[in-house]
Length: 332
Image 1 (cartoon, rainbow, N blue to C red):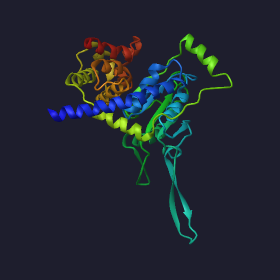
Image 2 (image 1 turned 90 degrees about the vertical axis):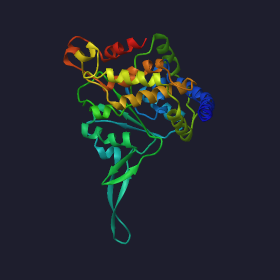
Image 3 (image 1 turned 135 degrees about the vertical axis):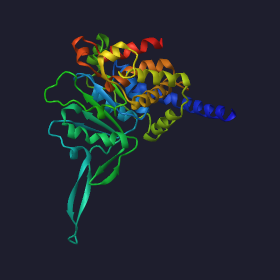
Image 4 (image 1 turned 135 degrees about the horizontal axis):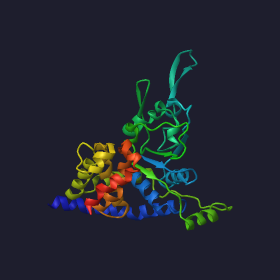
């Protein structure tokens, strides 16, 4: 028992030590991104959990600015790839070129692509072909890429923040389910309210604009990510996650709505994502361990891209958020 108390005391001390830095991080991002507190919180939670995020919203909602600000505040180097229909996998990963040395011998040299960065923004990811989209799969899961049979490790930490426009569908390709599952969360970015939009007009069209400064270092971020995985989780929270994820599968659910309107549900990676995100959210809010309320708050962004609606659901205007919401009601 003494060992358990010692471990919890150590984790609590680390949480307290990080809380001021994380509060400063959120404040620094909020100076650049107005009126999107939930979006900022979810994106920061994703990074703390060690995952990748898919940001969905119409143009002009500061998605690109959010990624750039996040990279600066967290001290990570970042790169941006504009996905287009003619983008090739080598444009992302890099390629080998044949060089001739001074002695006349030829050899291949690997030129690294933009994926070799700590924070990668994949802008309008659904505009590239499935072949090019799949170039990110191995990198997002394994943290390395394989070129000509040779593995190349990616920088640590490594995160992908991809954006997608939900309106324009011409010239786009739907993301394959395997790739969607690699995103820890799908964060929907909505329009700002009137007061926020007024502030945007006044503060972003003048000669002087706020400049972001680093708050954390990559090493400190990785320490925070390591702490997230060490945080204790109660049996009640674990059971709540298991019940929620399993009940979202049509073949295992007792819900008539899920059975009738959902074609397929989330796999075990959804449970892993939910428990990591809940821990990260607790850390952001200076708490030792996550609660069931954290699971409820994160259920929709973690599950909605891991489920598919049936044709009858679309015909009756049933949304995936409604389906997940019905599963949260019994949790109180």
